[in-house]
Image (cartoon, rainbow, N blue to C red; front, side, top):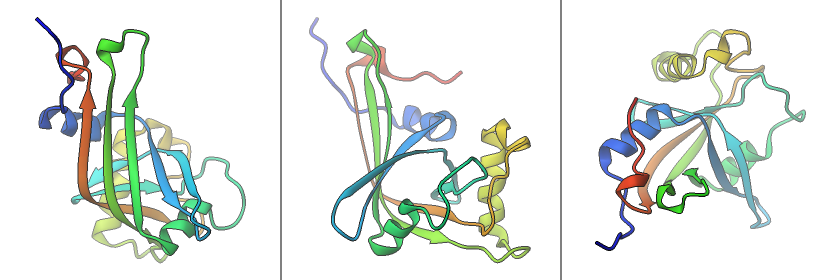
Length: 159
């Protein structure tokens, strides 16, 4: 029986958005050049949140934040590669992003929910601040979700 490429099932997409450890965030700079960076993320309140956290980074406002403020169109890519090509898959979320800068001590319910979701997903935030000073998160409102997998053997399983 021939194998055919297919879209990831909705349950697999939901599982990946809850559990997959990292994504690549694609933004576009003011000069039109693409910018791609690995990010951590959590889904909360219908959006996908990625913090500018306490891991070491270059000083100043990060390019991903400047780019989102210039052009809110972004893509997030989750993917899996291995030598057995029957197990390959990718998931792309296109969306509109915003840089959220909560006032210290006044995060609000939405940001507090995002921070709590990030803490639940990443135990590393027990020792690394979820938000650095000044606090900034990128919030992505999905506008399209596309996926591909090599076949049934590639569908990520919950567990």
